[in-house]
Length: 384
Image 1: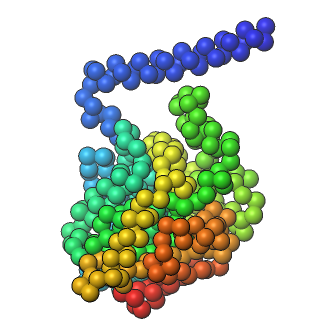
Image 2 (image 1 turned 180 degrees about the vertical axis):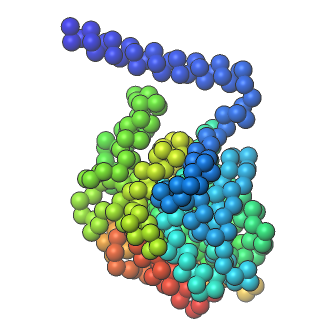
Image 3 (image 1 turned 120 degrees about the vertical axis):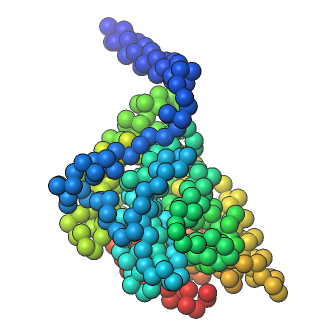
């Protein structure tokens, strides 16, 4: 009796997966491919219809000045750009899941010091659409950065055009961008960057969940969506592995100083409903080499670019002095300080990096964004 129940359930799962697969083939033959290349973010339409209910969403579409939502071949992208037009430019790249509102404190500090900032929602986060026929790897995110730069009415390209600040996942995206476009960068600041996190920190359960071919994709997506739902005792979306050693629950961190009652977990919960492509984007990014350490090629390429700028009499444009700034948190249980200092020496040489350690955990870019911005500005004033 028990065997027949198990057999029936297994057969049902296989049949469902087969139907989904055949359906995708039939749909691909009968419709234009463009109809299925991205999943639209519902958030824009929810906000448009809900003007009278303004203030109920933890992340409003006009959260910052200079907002624009522009179309690309990969779907629409949400960008905010503000600050003095004549000021030095700063492009900021957010983390794995919490959209760009998480960098609001840092962005406002830069603007208050006379900088022109641009922040944006990565694909599948916040108000940006989610491409669904490509991998969320360095190629896609580097392309998105270039698209974002091109959307500005001001010139963000050329030699030493802007500073780039990347937090968590955004740090590894910044490294990938700098490896190929170093000439465009005035400086690079990595805040608790991803890309070098030891894979040993990922539990076997998570490794099986993210990569096993035995799990149907629809079931995998369903389980991951459930695991990303903020709740007591669960890891938050920006910290894929649960830890009981963190000083503060990441989900409980206030998202910006002007919204102290809105927490990171509130934004993630909103995003799970407002952006249908979020979970797939999250999963695809985890599978790439942008979070956990798998491939060191882009880090070594960046090291080569930095070395060339230190060794030439007539240096190449971009990244003057051939050094970058690495900001780590003393109590970070995700991008562990001591591990990162040890591991980064295997991909960059000591002359490549200046290091600054701050009190706090992985949340410093959110909770202490103003302090992070101040540390970066002090470094730029000395080195750039």
